[in-house]
View (cartoon, rainbow, N blue to C red):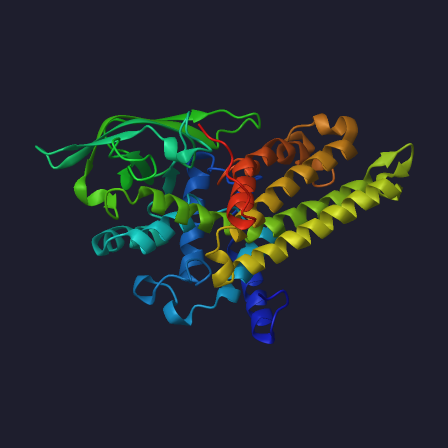
Length: 397
């Protein structure tokens, strides 16, 4: 666990900052993980991701044979890149790059790696994650999307529905969980597949959200044929793929940095806002709230650094604790911003450009996403209580 830079890391951090400043595309960064809007932004975002990988700033943990640093990989450098991207106004790379890479590198066959990894790292292919369902969100193991084996054609036949799928409207491929054996316990009957998002029978319907954007979609499968070689791992490995992938997602080193950035912007907002002719920041209660949020953001960063260590990353409770902490903090910062802004909180994202670097309403509306995505706060608390503290299991039907 490292909270300060060595001389070498400080030099590397300067390189990363310069690279971002010189190469980040003119695509506006929005709160959260937002799909690129329009073909122009999509093309620029693809090129941005490819540049990051080519410069060794993305996917450095990959084995050398697939373009990473292999044994030379320095986890601390990876953390620096994550932090600096979070501090900048650079857009996110499109798709679920780290999650798709994790699945392919950890569970994929040699043939799957050879076929998909080169185009994943070049961002010729964008990936999405097809896990959640309308009646199986927090209880993922209850998913009902079914994959039935067709012995005559040697293919899987998939029917069902997924929802809240980020990037599915622009994705080329997806990691799909489907039930392949309904006769065994629900966790054991799930398998993972690589799905061509343009296959016949796949329908993507974008969902318009309260923020006004369509970051998520629902995806329908009607007799979609998936070849046998598209299964990831063996039949029944789907639950292992899901839990391993979600743990990798929950480590999330960038989120504490993002929270700190929002608090810093909120301090500037409090300095510029006037309450009865006095700057809002002059109020002792406001200062206490800002100081608390800043301290919590720093704590979130410390938890993320701790969770990057091998023992914590592999633990049952390390990633859930970190994820629960930052997601609840993100909501808290949004609520604080709304309370400070007063009537200006009614301004939407476009109108609020002139309000102390705002976009606060958009951030507030989006903040609840983090308490649900990658496992809801309620699920995180159950994991911490049951697996970490040894408390009795919650009663379940």
